[in-house]
Amino acid sequence: MPPLQGKHALVTGAHRGIGAACAIALAEAGARVACADIRMPEATLARIKGNNPKRGHFGVMVDVSDEASVDTLFATVREGMGDLDILVHCAGVIHEKPLLDTPAEDFDRVLGINLRGTFLVGREAIRMMQGREGRVILTASDLAYHGRETFSPYVASKHGVMGLARSWAKEFAPHILVNALCPGPIDTEMLGTANMTPEWRARELDIPLARFGQPEEIAEMAVFLAGPQARYITGQGLGVNGGSVMP
Ligand code: NAD
Image 1 (tube, rainbow, N blue to C red):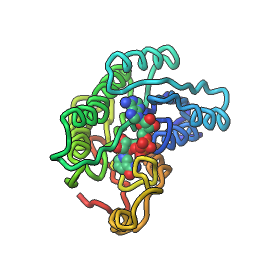
Image 2 (spheres, protein in one colour):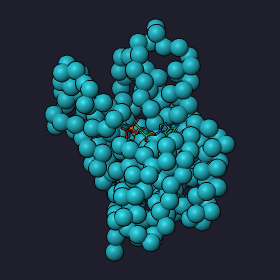
Image 3 (cartoon, protein in one colour):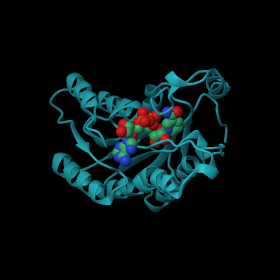
Image 4 (tube, rainbow, N blue to C red):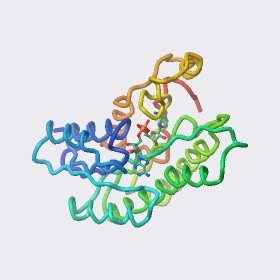
């Protein structure tokens, strides 16, 4: 039997990149998946429905930084699935600018989507998981373990995500396990591998495995964390990073 057979999952950021790969992988592992994003994740949904028809997968539009929008998302998830076993929260944005050129509005936007968004979506998912065994999988970064010049609001948001994961893991043990994916450089539009200068590319690939990771390699970790073999793992940041950090 597929490891997530009969489970109900919500994936945010499902339009593209890591979130899309996670939604596809969870469906392949047997889960029924609600795919959420600020853009309707049509292509992801089409692929999931094509491969796994009749399981009632559906898409929802949400702005994760907006409380009313997140409330509407969860009303839709409640109506569509009744209950929730798994959250994989991937929605996020990157931001690169020297600190002295960074307006406070930029900081608010990045923290609003990456950290407040994780708080809002995680809180409502955990509310839906009360009285059940749940798995909450957030997305931090290898940058949750160190600093990086010209990325400070992004890095701060990912340190914050780890704070939420560790605190919720303690608050909701033993029934709800909370962990965070900590990807290294993954070949998605966010990282912009297609448009990198040779210098930037060389810097990103100066890691032990000397290549970009693929979104599917993060999704495999998400399926593992959502499944029975991860039953003794909580409050952790799981590095899938080619060795970029060794905390
Ligand atoms: P991506 O840009 O390809 O995908 C991000 C998705 O989030 C998009 O589909 C986008 O529409 C959605 N999104 C953005 N703002 C949103 C909002 N307000 N509400 C709802 N959805 C919103 O990026 P990715 O590389 O797939 O990154 C996914 C996650 O992984 C992010 O949290 C990112 O910080 C993290 N991450 C990525 C890398 C990497 O190298 N790609 C490394 C470490 C961590």
